Image (cartoon, rainbow, N blue to C red):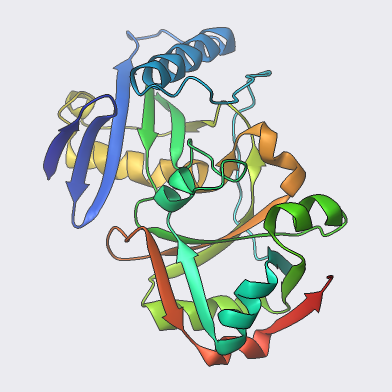
Length: 278
């Protein structure tokens, strides 16, 4: 496993082509359990510190009450809607040309109102036996993302932000499996976004190598952090985005992805209906 220090960000670990950034990791003494208020303080302090050293002083985190993220997997039966601009439809979608973004792409996207600089970030609370492990990580580097919504009632807001054409995917399963084959993904997953500024996820798991809970992660600890950070990093966003009622379709690749992926697949048009609002 490789380890690389990234100034003002954390330690990046790479194992079998997939990476994970650990910003901070700590472990309580035996038989010590932190209260929610203590966990809140821990997350706030960590977030404030890293934002300040990266000169990110205008992030709109409001930090309401702590709400641990719980994101169950499900196969969504309702249609998937994506608002797009007319030019995007005419120049790309209509011709079978599609684009998927990475979490890095959405962290750095030019449109400030759409940018979420905490895409891929998560705070993990691991209960292992009689200890608690708290860590802040950046994950999801092996994912390509397609963002949409399950609700088109808020037409004016969404159209103004993303465009007046609505791309409706009638069969997400058919669409996702075609995309998976086209880009060589290992799997796909669809979930609603959970809106929480803390992006905190608690889990119970036994870690046999507690010596690997340090700036020198063991492979066991890397795999645990990779697995439990997967959904919180991909399917949680700050509360300021909750009006979007986002559905997110993610594709897991065998290795870390590029910033974005463009591909052609005319077969996807069979699963798509375009609703022209204006």
